[in-house]
Image 1 (cartoon, helix red, strand yellow):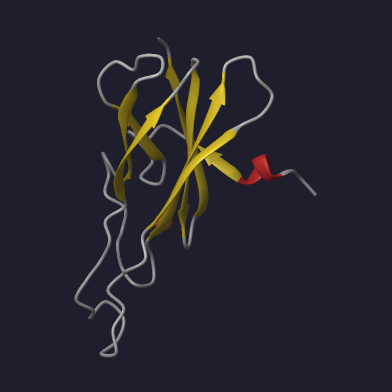
Image 2 (image 1 turned 90 degrees about the horizontal axis):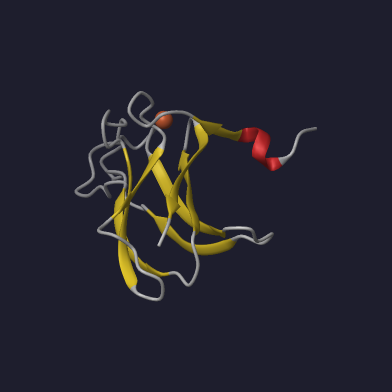
Length: 130
Ligand code: FE2
């Protein structure tokens, strides 16, 4: 048996469509809110069908030099063209994209995990410096 981290897949989002992309908007300042865009399929679109789609992205903060990780948010994409008419016949889909806003009191790194219903868990991270 491995640990949880053994099942988090890592790659470059420019080459691998499953990797969550963390876009920090502007230049973060200590104690000031800033926006963070989270997405999957930024460079290479991920399939979006009832059978194959991105279910969620979770965002965490690892303060520099600290032991404990902070869970900032979970963003669920619930509609994938399901319908009484059948798969992929429904009237709505959620795109795997969300903007959130965070305020940090110390530098560290933002870490995201995305979940594809077929291809599992993928991670990425972005440094935040003041
Ligand atoms: Fe997938």
